[in-house]
Image 1: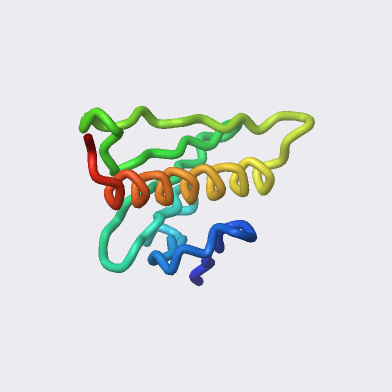
Image 2: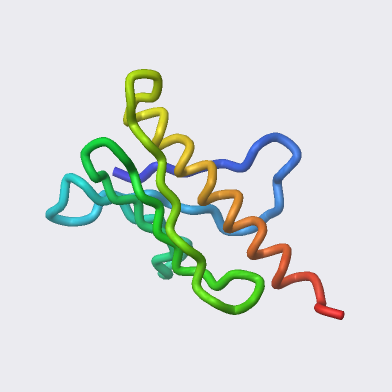
Length: 103
């Protein structure tokens, strides 16, 4: 099962899209692939989802993981949608940084 995350209207970049796939043998982990590179993981930790990045930040250091809480007002599906959207935003920001020469 593969689910593509499309950028929002006006964000069509022609860049490769993140493909989300379940981690083999795991019901609590989802992997975000771009081509053959694993760039993101979403771990389901019961009442929170954690998004792990494998891209460097602007300073060249690894970025911290981000958490999306699941509670009475937010379902796991909603939290997962937020994590997917955040991963897409990080990916597009990374591509913009790479394409823009540093002064």
